[in-house]
Amino acid sequence: MTIHDALTAHAFTHGLTDAQTRSLAEITREVRFAEDDVVLVEGARSKSFYLLISGSVAVELRTARYAVSVQSLSAGHVFGWSSLLDRQDTLFQVRARESTTALEIDGALLKECCFRDPSLGTELLHRLLMVVAGRVKATELRFAEMCGVRVG
Figure 1 (cartoon, rainbow, N blue to C red):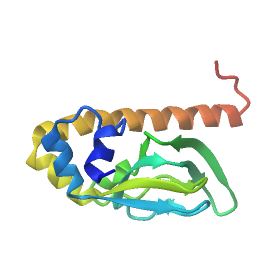
Figure 2 (cartoon, rainbow, N blue to C red):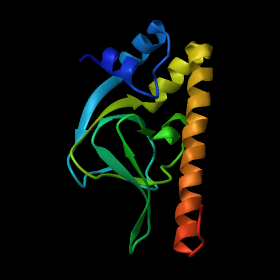
Figure 3 (tube, rainbow, N blue to C red):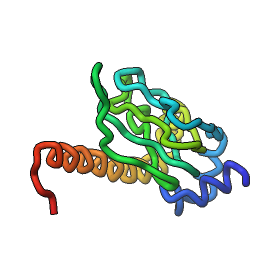
Figure 4 (cartoon, one colour):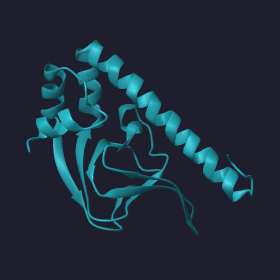
């Protein structure tokens, strides 16, 4: 399967035009992570956006003494949205839960693509806002659970 095919089939990029998918394919590479690899370090400068192809990762809030899993993500999900923001540090740690394959897109190059093609930028912005909202909701649910609040 080519990078273009993988992007066309991925839930996050599904439905983009062929030209948009081809633009993204030019700045995308496949990466693999072993179980327990830390993919994103909380507090580090965010540089890449990832689309999960197989395996899974845990999105974690981390302190010096412990890490709390906020959400687990599997094929079809994405992470690393803060890489599209200027000078933004990663907000969550992301750790591979098992052998995992992802598509990695350089955040700065993705941002350039979005400015060159405003329709792509608008579409990705809408999709990314849904990801951010989902991450906030997952964090709220996890904290409620930790505080003993029953969430329906």
